[in-house]
Length: 86
Image (tube, rainbow, N blue to C red):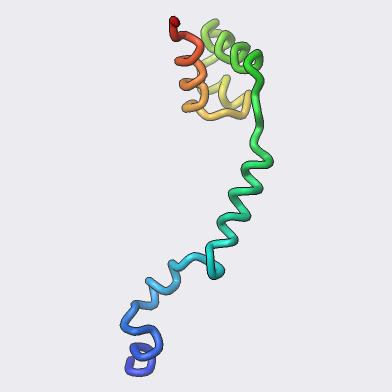
């Protein structure tokens, strides 16, 4: 333990394994950039179409979201935006 304690100043091996890869977390930044560029963008008309389809209740919301490739949270956000009276 003497040699390990001197080189890592008392850090546990598990703590050193959890550090971000690269000196500045560049791998994480790279992954976030890829996700940002490949994210699907829905038009207002597309969002309205999906929300209206959910209101028809022909399918469950979970089935609709799965078919459209969106999360339930996104659907709920869109439906709240759609149903807000201004």
